[in-house]
Length: 378
Image (tube, helix red, strand yellow):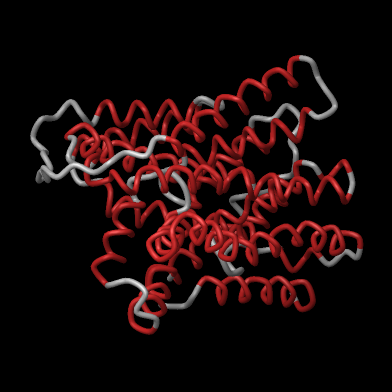
């Protein structure tokens, strides 16, 4: 949907970039972790006006969605107090349907031969049975290594070299390491500012390693804040409500970070909820900005390396496995998952996405209306 809108606005109507340039940008961002649509827009701004315009473009793009998702926290609290949460009755299984569909579509694209199939299968089993913060980065590294054992797939080489601007990469690495060290320090010493710093580290790490888009990010957040936490930061129902509602709002799926960040800090009051939303937004999108501005000038160099070319096959297979396992984990987290009223929305959402051209917001609105109707008439 985002790519189609970009094509109409920036190629056909505005003539800001050519069709070939947009296709090249779209292909390039698939190689990087982070939000692909966000990175594509950031690069359009970069090509038209350099770093300054790319940052302005990013800010304009993410602000509406993140603001709405951050406000959803307050809406949920209001609905709970007034016993109106029944409208979200089918949103949780609907969210599972969206994720299952993403896994299905990614499977058709990424699983091309036997090696990628077994990498995906291993990722499914490890994600499902091992609950650790190191699972996702370990799987990504492992998948990229395993896919390099074959010497049959070699890319077409382009001998031209491009200059490397290292400052963005050094800044990315510095923030990554500093956030990790500070997060561990405040955790060990149980300092009062522990949660905000831990939150930034979590989201910056997510934004640095997420291959596969918003569906994989939702998986990581669910595992971090609902499943693995000794005391869950939010209920599975609240999390799935946010994961479902983000499909109906404008902007990138990554804007769910504003919702989750606010939920993590909501016990501190309204000020901390807002702070959590801001931290989640900055933490999740900052790595994408730094990485895309570093790698774009040299991506033609990188894609000529056989290791990078083959690694992407393994990484893509891993993300499919993560999404498939997440679909099961999210489904099992729903109260009474095997009831008819839970299974039917999952299947119906999948079928609507697969066989119709109905947009995601319309599907979300339908299930909200169905929740209201079921409460009043069934």
